[in-house]
Length: 457
Image 1 (tube, rainbow, N blue to C red):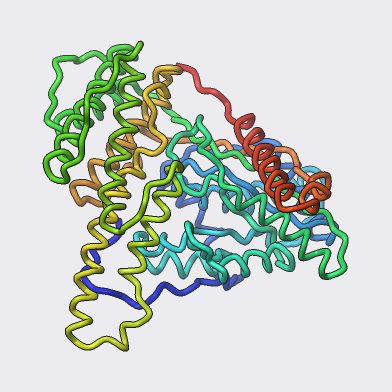
Image 2 (image 1 turned 90 degrees about the horizontal axis):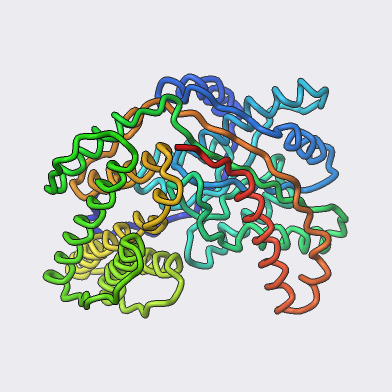
């Protein structure tokens, strides 16, 4: 959780990759222990890793440029991707007689905002492991230029999450942003300009977390605590899936009631009656979308922004508007009085940004995700979303590891998507370029969805 901003700060600077072999070597050695004892992973399983090994060998031989598009359901993803690249990959290559030169690493793009809430030490570590920062929601020319150069000339492949941000759902892929596909086509452009003829390949990587020791009793206990924290006690004591789902649904409705009342009273938001729905879940979904719209409007009104139809775009525009008031390049030119006023603006921008953060936490929540497949893993995901949200509202540092028991992760490698067949369409004209990016993004999504293994109740 980021600390409260009470004063304007200098502008955010780009954090380039500064790969350090000693840092990588030391961190890669302690990573398995941290994943097991710090994060509670009992198993990290790789599926079809030999495909990554073959692609990596071709990359090291200078036969292609490689872009890894990984799913992003959790903030733990960078660490498990590290385990894939540093441990599972060389192991699979050795088993199949594929010679890879160490270190088997990857550059990766990460949101510049992460060090703001995770700490500057994380930014330092990410850089030394090959991370390159990017500011979402704006034309970050320096970050994009660095990403293009890494993809074109880098010692390692480049990895990025096309979902853009975590969605906390292991069995539901969030809408993909076009940036990964666009980076691939830019690399083809840069190769052509340099007189080099190389294929550019995008390799999808699925990441899926499941419970190692599922316990309905543990889920019931967490629901008890959530109900107490929200003040909506229940007489139900059973731990059967049907009863737990009713409790989870009622908890969500109570939370909606509280938030609607808060925004109606405190920010004069209107919540007129909705038409009747065929199911209670459809009503929940409609109420949630209506609430999220109103929450974003509160922030947009303050920053003078007009709502757009794309929810993710609205969140990014709000974040950039807040950062422009919090991180300024003119501080040295301000008088003492003007600096005080700038501090006021920064502090208020930070508070207004919290509305967007609240909405962002419920971006991927629907009324049907658990009902359509009431598995214990889906229950755990939604319960933990609510738990983290309550911790955030109460100003607590959320510690959820162990709340639902030990976990396991499945890292599955898809099939290579070569961009050469799409190149003529991309080159045709501007509309053709957009269509090519759209088609490649759809291909990435199709593979990421196919890599999901449905969990059972």
